[in-house]
Length: 208
Image (cartoon, rainbow, N blue to C red; front, side, top):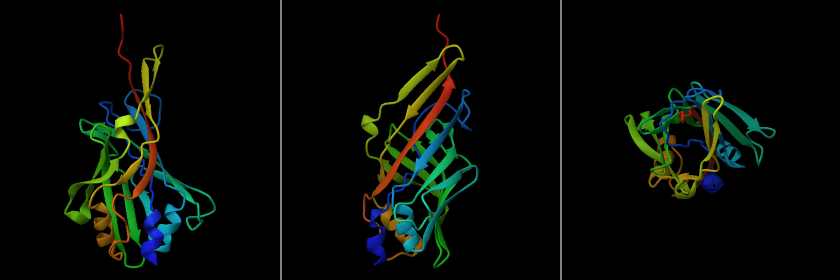
């Protein structure tokens, strides 16, 4: 049954960090950063079995780990440029799309904002009247510890967060299923959604 197959859903929708830095690329320069997201093993094949494919739009790119998306343990890695704002890390101009090939219905997560402090990931969802919804909860946000590296010669501070664990926010499982026309209870509440890492490059304050 499709509903059973999708239960192992676990996307590393990589979205992850609250910071005042502004980031737009993966270069080691102040104000730049990149999110690297990896889906959980088996997620893509389970969704594909249900007729759902996941892809990115805008400045984001993706690559496949394994033989294909139908491979039992296949994974997809998303590389998404990050632009920060005062509400957290925002993947401005990049979208994550869930597309049901059996009925042409889709769910778009537009400009996701990752807020470690609030322990959540929010995104604009056009299919819900352009509401900003909390899509994911960062289950280990209270224990995430950034690794900070200071390059005083180059005036660069690098802050890295790894292994942020994501789960579906309350009510979002039903929203996804309804929007994509999947059977009720296809996705369980609080389902594991994966892991991710973000590296932020910011200007290192000068010290006397």
